[in-house]
Image (cartoon, rainbow, N blue to C red; front, top):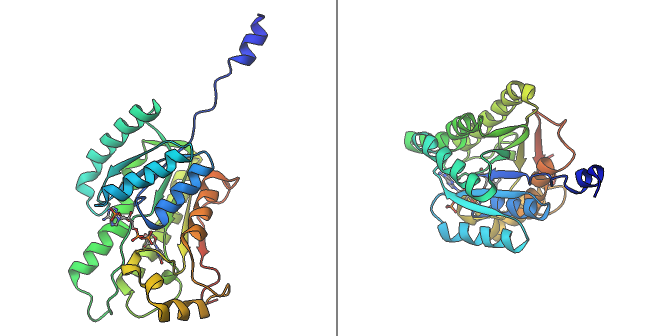
Length: 265
Ligand code: NDP
């Protein structure tokens, strides 16, 4: 066989892209992971308590022909981040033979619905630690693990644009993540890393006790305020996140993209 023929035949396959999704055991993170798997992108997902749901997500991804692993992480506890990065590198080396990521989705989160007057300092600190401080420092710790040319998607909320009673602390953190996104885009741009923030409207997940999904009056009221005439489903968000990561969208950076079906336009 000639050298030329050999060279052509032996061209190595391009390495599969890998995304880290925080809070990938349920809801929007899990849905995004499945959309990514269908697009040929592998996933490291994290969970807080639900090891069983996380294992289920990994099994679903594998059934789609993708590769995945689940790691425990409390994104509200910065003291655990250094040891998480060590476990992440181990998992990447074991599963993929490398120690780097292409994509990061800062998705993990909780909702606390309380009026401004009733919100305690503990409520505020919990929301801040998960939704703002955790996103800030986890992303910082992951910088050496991210490949140049990678992409980051943060999760905000429609509530950072429009205001509804009961979400002052939560929405303030999401507003912070939107500003942080622009700064990350500016500082990581020289490495070719794009950073955007998606702001879902109300989506039927377990979030906030599953209120949007399980309380019919609330579901109807939100649908009535939405151009598309219904509340959002996880596929409405997971597909868009997968497109931002896997599509031809690298030139989009520093942007807030609301994915709400036109809520409160
Ligand atoms: P879900 O409640 O369905 O899922 C939450 C996920 O986050 C789970 O995987 C959970 O892990 C994980 N998680 C929760 N707390 C922590 C923590 N401290 N550390 C690590 N992981 C944690 O929520 P959604 O999927 O609906 O929400 C995902 C994101 O989207 C959140 O940032 C939320 O603020 C945002 N969002 C959601 C909207 C909605 O209407 N659903 C609207 C706008 C924004 P485990 O399974 O182990 O508990």
